[in-house]
Structure formats: structure tokens, C-alpha cells
Length: 285
Length: 271
Image 1 (cartoon, rainbow over the protein chains, first blue to last red):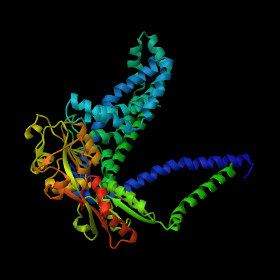
Image 2 (cartoon, chains in turn yellow, brown):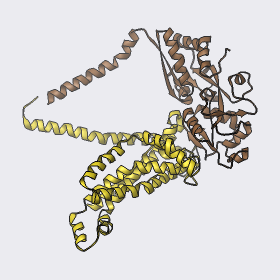
Image 3 (cartoon, rainbow over the protein chains, first blue to last red):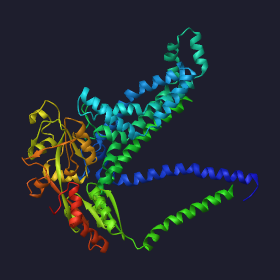
Image 4 (cartoon, chains in turn green, orange):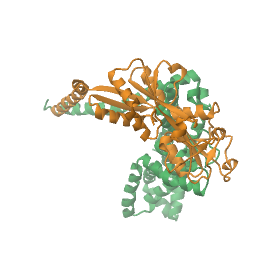
């Protein structure tokens, strides 16, 4: 208790530093926890047998997660195929074409889209997308295609907001210069603005990938979770996250460790993606 | 500023202390707690039994948790729970526990009601799930891939199915996996080309149970031993139970307890 303003300032700063560092601490603890639980199995079974193994039967001693790594990348790629063109178009429209009123309407709508819980997306997928795929395209409906569609929608807000920011940060003089040279609006966007905002747009795709690869609830509900690498877009598949969530409830012993190893692989993949995305954003500025 | 934070800290501390003192209050009221954990297949029935038991015996609190058969058995070995629930037989290394069979549950092979198929042999079911039979045409229906659904690795229902139906054959990698009886049923109820397996107690008009080797899955056929895909629901204990635990088990095995299980579609020891 003091009225000395300088000490008070210091005190506030100190409290803020503690809270700020706490998030770092949590990250550190999560890393420690996952690696400590997951690494012993790598030691026991061998890195190659886990990462490149084709057979997952943890109660019988097989811990191969290669099909799941492939499947995770497949759904992520599928989500990008669907989400990237839509997201980028939306960002271009928002930044270059839309009036103030439209923007006032679209932006909150997008924020709402980002706030919808993933279980709701999963539920919609099971009730609508899966039967549509089954009845009109084929297969059981629980498939790479259905999962890609849902994930494509889920990553839209990430792609839109980051591409929008990077397009908006292209200096006004670029636009004016291009238009003054007689280029049309679309030529300006296509030839000047998008190349200038390229690294930010790429970063938005990579962060979108990070979101898609980490998504769990919606994926278990619609992916079908079969262990094989899908041979067509109508085949079911199991992702790394899905594997953990699906089997955690019953897992004990080595089986549980196997799930933590899955977590380690997932964490490494997400770290690499985030690193690439940050690298892309930094190079711009 | 500092004063305010101090007050908040003191308030938090009191909260923590008051929380931690709660179990002692419970003990003062002389309530005895029985903890039960394990199979999620057995859990809903145990909860129902516990509810009824606690109405008549207000001195006892029964705490029922899930976690799966394997986890329940493990917890019982470690003495972290009084009773473990299992929906599969014990493995060799778990045999030091006492087992009490509380009832039997049939595993039914189910298809969509639109499916004209009525019966399969055990052999055919095993070949569907091992990936040898992939098309409904091979079973005399339309030319369409079979959407088979199984349970995830570690599930008690899956390990009973592997033991009773697959008999050593492996379930194919390309088959869909769902993580509960409920989601398997949901897939089968919505996909006309699906086939899956669930507890007899959960079968309703949304799915169609198949006759296996000429025997209809029914409580009577399970009781007479004609229907073969049957697994026990077990309670396991490590050594002697305390008074409360014994009383609960006696209730479960009594006519009242068994009637509750029978109402839920399980097969008990009385008629």
C-alpha cells in the first residue's frame, strides 16, 4: 500500500509481465507433457515403425501411423482446394469492391462463422453433407470429400481475415499507379495487388492448413475413421487428431503412449506449418 | 490497487480452503462412497442400478464413471476404485481379480431397415468384416459396396466381437470406425448400405437385427444358449469388498436388481 506513483507503475508492470509469461509457461508445459509421454514409445518401437508403419493395432503391438499422416494431409489439402478460392475471392471482394454497408454486414457474419463450435459443423456434416454425398456421388458418404467440404468452410474465416489484412496493407500508391497507367480494376488486382500481397495470402493458406489439420470433433463425426489410406475421394479415412480422440477413452499402457506419439507427430507438423507461415509474413515487412 | 489484489487473493484462498474441506463434511454425515468405473457399455445400466440402490439406502453414495473396460479393470487392480466394470472376459494377466457376472448382453448384427437381407451365417459376418465380402451382390442383393462399421481399438464390444465372430481373423483396415454403440447405430440407421454390430438392448425400429446361423437375436435365445454372440457384463473386485460394496452387489444380483436390467433389454438370471 503506497501512494508513490512510480512504485505503483512498477507494480502494475510486474503483474502484467507475470501474466504475459504465463502463456509461455503453459505452452512450455504442454510441450513437456506431450513429449515426455510420447517419446518413450518412439524409443521402444522405433521412429521408423511409428512414422512409416502401415498397421495401427496398438493392443497387438503395431503403432504405424503413416496412413493417418497421409490422411491428415489429404483432408487438409482438400479443405484448401475448397476453402482457398472461396476465401481469397471473399477477401478481394471485401477489400476492393464492397461498399461500406456490405462490409459492415459481411465482417460480423464472418466473425460469427469463426465462432461456430466445431461439433455443430460436424453435426451439419453428418445430417446434410454425408447423405448428399452418399445419395448423389456414391460411397458411404463418410469420406474424404465430405470432410474436405466441411473443413473448407471451417477454414474460411482464417483465410479471409488474414488475406484481407495483407491486401489492405498494399500501399494505396500501387493501386493509383496501376490505374493511372490505364489498367482496369481487375488487371490492377490481378497484376499488382495480389502479387504484392502474395506472401500474406500464402501465410493465410498455411494458417488455414494448420486449422484444418488440427480440427478434431467435426472430423471424427464425418470422416468415417477407417484406418486405410483412402484410394478415392469417397473412401473413409482417419486423421491424426481423430485417432487420438477416438481411442483415448479406452486406451491404457502402450496404447495410450501410442496416442501421445500421435500427438507428438501432430505437434511437430503444426509447428512446421506455423513456422512457414510466420516466415512468409515476416518476409513481406 | 495492492489492497484490492490482496482482498482478491484472500477470497481465492478461502474459496480453495472451503472447497478442500468438503469431503470431510461428507465423512461427517457418515455417508459411505462406493466408486465404480469401467466399460461404457455397462455404465448406463450401473447408473440406473445405483439410482435405485441409493433411494433405498441413503447412507451410501455410489460414484459411477466410464473409461472403458480395460481402464476399469486397471483401476481395480490399482485399488483406485471399489468395483470395476467390464464388458469382456478378463485376460490371462487380469485373472487375479474376482469377477461377478451381473448379466449377459447379446451383440446384434444390424443393417438398415430398407435392406432386404434377413439372415447371415457367422462365417459370412466374419468375412464381411475381414474384407473378403465387399459387395452386397455377393450376399444376393444389389451391386453396391458394403459400408461396414466397427468399433475402435480397445472397446469391449469390439474385443468381444473379435473373439466371438472374427475368431482370429483381423478386421479389415478399410472398414469405418465409430467410437460408441450410439454412433454405430446412427450410421446404420441413416445409411441403407451399412452393416454394424451393437448391444441387443439398443436395437429399436431404426435398425434391423439380422438372424445369425438361423437364430434370432432375442433374450430367450440368449438364455437358452442358442444365440452365440453373447458377452457377459462383469463387475470385478480386487480382494474382499467392504460392507457397502457387498450390499450393492447383493442388490444387483437380487430379483429387484435383475428386473431393472431386464427392463433395459439385458439378460439376467431370473425370468
